[in-house]
Length: 107
Image 1 (cartoon, rainbow, N blue to C red):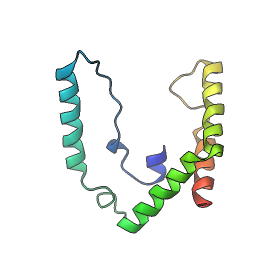
Image 2: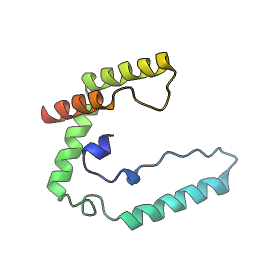
Image 3: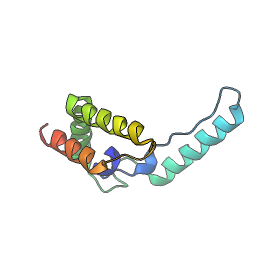
């Protein structure tokens, strides 16, 4: 969600599972991810964002993520997910995006 709001290719991040006993699986995952990143290209340029704008956006997002408002908004969403037993789906991504964008704008 944060990468999307920064207009950064969301395929630049991956979360995969490989246990310590699965060395070949780990190597395969890392190799595939590395190749995907090589195909996507340099951060910013492949998204059409100049270096200065990219740095500004990343700094603003970093400050927003460190802030209490966004963490509290995520905590409320997590509480709601648990209550509804709807794991993996944010109850209101729009609310989180609004908080994120407001926090980024204040930096």
